[in-house]
Length: 140
Image 1 (cartoon, rainbow, N blue to C red):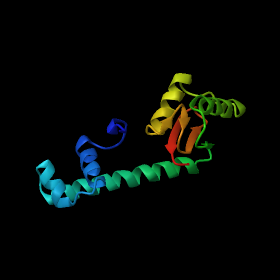
Image 2 (image 1 turned 120 degrees about the horizontal axis):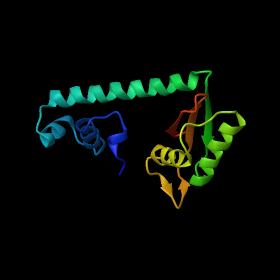
Image 3 (image 1 turned 90 degrees about the vertical axis):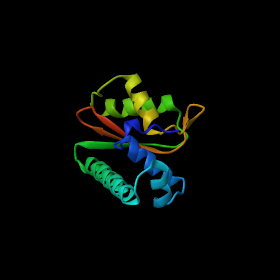
Image 4 (image 1 turned 120 degrees about the vertical axis):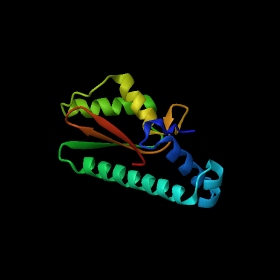
């Protein structure tokens, strides 16, 4: 299971969205967590606002002239993906912030656990800024 701790969600928001994803109604969720339906609706509204803000932030980063996007295909070996990122940066004269372990860790979290036998199961976009910062996005 994916850990919500590296997301924008609070523990309560993560709980509610998980219950909603499992098919529960607002009334069932409210009963399960011991609150009112209106509170569940308010919390879900905040979740959706956070999601929209995160998507808008990603779109903004992708639109910057100062950013570059590297697409990593599904089926790519995790270590090959690290090499692709480092080579991509080297060819553009970008000094990446962090080390190989940081890149590997970022790839692992960006795949949300969708790795099997050392292969990335879903395509990824890696947004790289000229400052050397990068962001891994699931679903290229």
